[in-house]
Image (cartoon, rainbow, N blue to C red; front, side, top):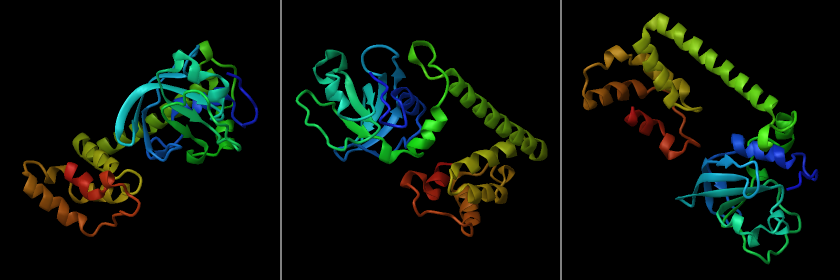
Length: 247
């Protein structure tokens, strides 16, 4: 595959974007309108054949597994002759970064599903290009070592901040209470972290010990009534009532 510079991203950089999941992993739309969830993007091959092996996907509610091939534009599938190449028979998803301005008709076997990622990215292509710019690829075409090293550094720094914050909370309130508050706050995800954190404060762990389910529901239900829950734009599985029932 050629890197090409008709895009701000090279194919090597695009592979890194796919591998690290810098896009919406849920609620993607294929070119034929079906819904796609990326459960696992696959293992990079670094050699001939499809770019990623053993990906796990959910297409229109049905889970499937197989290979994934990436190109900057959809028409490169035909130009590279993949449809007639048995090495690509296991491809279940063809991912392109940009949509072709004048799409070409395919005369060979089309991939089972096709995704154009640019309209569904969390960051702009320019931002992704800046993030993935780096040194030479690692072994067998793997992402640049300095990019992954920087991501590892950022991840460790974030983990250390979280660890230190939990340590301070455990010192002040005790390990069990700190864990109680931390887990309940996490149930709120992005939109409802604050009300879940306040609910954990109003109903501490000590107040729930030994209670049966009915008593727990009364305890939490009474405290939750006056909290500022946000439900607009929240998926049904993340609704506060469902999260609290799971707790």
